[in-house]
Length: 67
Length: 208
Image (cartoon, rainbow over all chains, first blue to last red):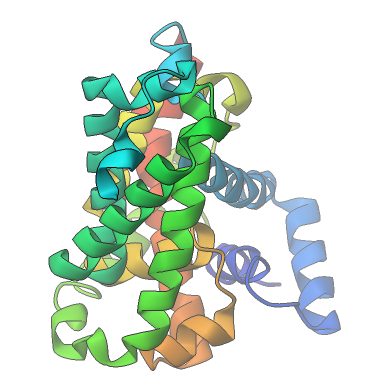
């Protein structure tokens, strides 16, 4: 089975290129059984989302410190 | 002629430009962003000046700081993309390699066991309510710090990809790296960034 080191790399690359069918299958099997890598995959998507907000800097001043 | 651009204080929106603190902050944020992107202070300054000037010229369109900011960053982003496209050769490979791969093996060893699985206490945690958390100034300060902690090449590739939304081929062209090299660098940048955010933000949130 794929190792977490390989799975995490694919979860990152997934954001930059389409994965091959074989990669998708292996990754799918891995993440089905590995909650840590599933979480990692979600965090990769969050990073992208956070980055987009960072650039837009939307309402940063207006919302102030009240988290 | 230029004087006329600044004479907008009769419109309510013109007040935005008289809020020195806001404008200074905005300028500094843009400059920091631009310098990280193009690695050349003079080019970065020029791009920021141009973006600010466009904002002055279009001041009537904005009545909120946030709207102005979004807009001015969009202009800046386009200017930076132009600069990067023109200045293909600006990257000095030897500078970029420095420090880049130095700690990667150590990080991988720290996160993963010898047989390639997550170390028990390094397993990624659920990021609770990122929607809520990322709104705060404190979060953005941590995000800034984490970005700055990345090796220069990592943060630039990451920002080209995620901030400027350039696609892989475009970055490879610009930076004269192979696709697999870029993919690996992006992976390592994300790995570090998530580690830094988890340690400094999300972990703390979870514990409360």
